[in-house]
Length: 162
Image (tube, rainbow, N blue to C red; front, side, top):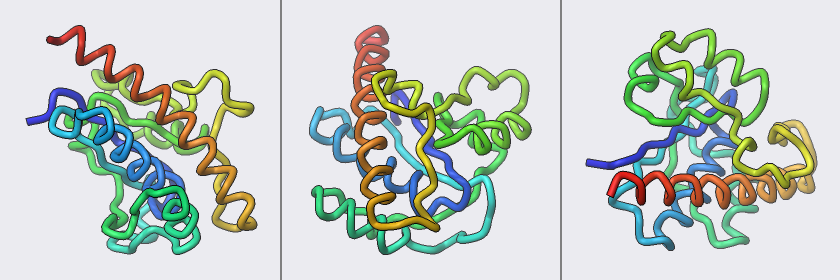
């Protein structure tokens, strides 16, 4: 059983949130914490349930050594709010949708993903879906920054629990 759990959330769970899941999985594995941290991703909308991540997201992630090919889209479920320590939205709209669904006792678990990357040039990860290849690279850059900050946060939390 994991000691800490994180759910990454975007709209359709085919671009940003599976990218964050894949990047964070790799960073957690490199830190030797894969047995202690549960990681998943989901969408606020059920547009793509069961679909693999967008091929452009997979390609850009693969070029940096991240494998997203085994991931499949799913929608946020009511149980996610009690099951995960953090539900991290990629942007303000998805954060608002999470907060609307969230039972009051779990409200503090819903946060903006890039709050873990205060050095990032923006507060939210823009959706690259209708954009260019550069937009996918930019999203991946921001996801890496957020995951670095999130890993430091999780390591600190696990240390406090030890």
